[in-house]
Image 1 (tube, rainbow, N blue to C red):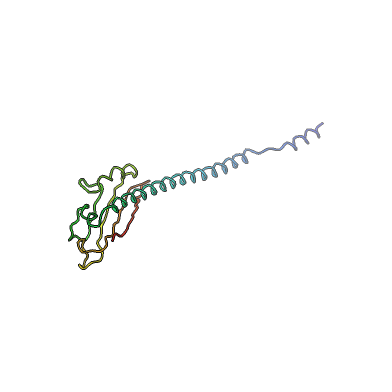
Image 2 (spheres, rainbow, N blue to C red):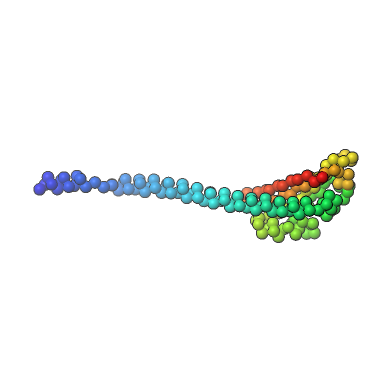
Length: 159
């Protein structure tokens, strides 16, 4: 009878408390690593979405400017024919692009837009808007996301 009990007890195997604690520790470490990857992935998706929205908004502003004639392009932004460059900001009262600030603020946290025009070519050196043959139009949107400054810039040349 004694031999039978011993056999049954030696056949009964299980995990010791130390083995269970080590297994739980390893499992917890793996789960924490995986969950942090999900958090970082979610942040990257949000940043990508915002960057896409900013790019689309910059293109929309650029299309609005492309609809204007060569002369209206710089005069509507407040430049004179003798100016060598002009930059206007969307967050300045009275700015010709202040109407875009509502849309910029809605899509980009603490966002601000600017449009810069630079004349190229022509008889005068340095080039002025009145004598140039081309204008470089640059639309820039800037905002803060997750504590980091973000910027989207779209440029084109108008002839």
